[in-house]
Image (cartoon, rainbow, N blue to C red; front, side):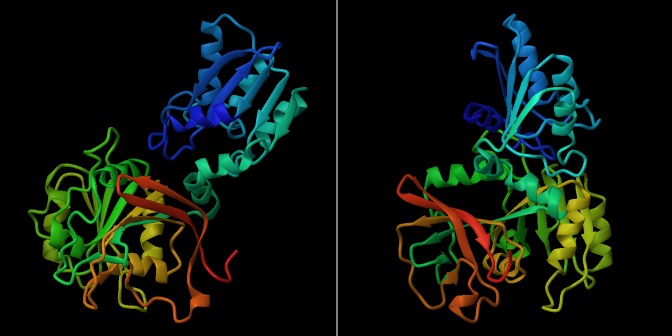
Length: 363
């Protein structure tokens, strides 16, 4: 199963809106007879790829280890559970049940009814971590939200002069581009666009560019901004007070979509409404890159699922230096959002701390 999970991860950032899935087939003597993984949405699933590999090896399958329950419905491909039944497998081991309402145990029941021995739950925790974005999307009906920021050791996103360039080094910078690849969308506020005119691409790694989402309640974005002019897909989220004439001009730009949003009680754009709009476009995950107030707004709204904090061994100091996460914040330490299942990784001289966000009082 660990090998099946390893195979599944080969397609990280490529399968959305589908999950990552890997499959290892053993013959009756326990020898590896085939391996495969789901490469991309619309392409054959992991079980089919592994059976094709099995045919190339001229071997016969007995047991299939799959990192997610084989599907039982027709989408762009046929049901994998039926393919395993037709191929005469005697045993199927799945890391976890697929919570997608279109599957939800049906694939396992169909194989069990066909006489196949079924086991579920091997390496389940690892399988859930692998597909955490997909699992939240199919169960909660909104994109998975990751908050990403680079800060100094004393928690500053920028100095007192708002200089935020080169907080961390090259290795951390490359890893942040890999994170962009693994999310469907990347989100920034208009302040970041006005300050830096970023491209928000994955140019430092191989992989698809995410959809760019810009929060811009008053449509202050320059018409010359890279995210409007480079041909990549961009969603501009604008508020009720944005000038309609400028929005009409932006709507004429190739690959740019204007999404009108209401404002929340805070006066900022309604982030719950935004996530609903992104969900309707099959965007399953969003990497929120800033700035400070945007990161704080998502945290204040309770709309954060994972944090990626890049920490540089630097001390910016200064009461007027910009904190990594702004917004209203917690009133008491007992109200603070917590990180669970934390991991720490060295990236050159910098550190990456990541973990799942847990809000007090929420299951």
